Image 1 (cartoon, rainbow, N blue to C red):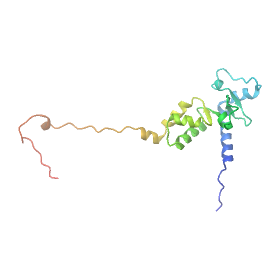
Image 2 (cartoon, rainbow, N blue to C red):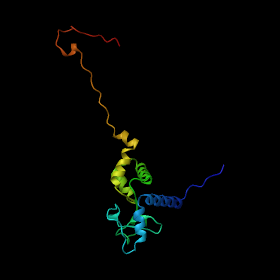
Image 3 (cartoon, helix red, strand yellow):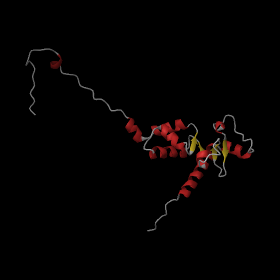
Image 4 (cartoon, helix red, strand yellow):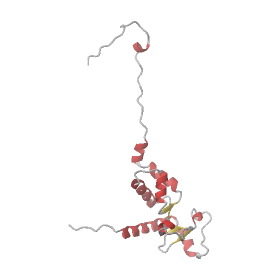
Length: 172
């Protein structure tokens, strides 16, 4: 039987970049086109674009990233300028699910903090909450225990009467 070689970290990183590019091309093609056609000194994004406040740019791999003020820091490039992911893509859902499971079904704030180290998701809080609400394990832990309702007492127990007027015998 042939032994298959496991995937290397470089292969996993490359495949993630490819899927990020595919998701971005599907959801942000207008912004990518306008950024690649504009000059480097004057990037133009439509005023109504959800990416306008992120000061995005397209890196050398063709991935749309968040601009910022951390260019001189010693962080890795992925931490300085995280990739932008759309809210409604399958890749975004998989990234959220993976972070949720790897962090032992943590809540939305921790999941957001973990994901924001590598990605910026448009309307991330809503996307994370939506995925956590679909988690079966978390739904089971959130469920409330039902309280048993007591049945009504019989007539002989609630109305006054003479001693031993009504009595019962337990044979067990």
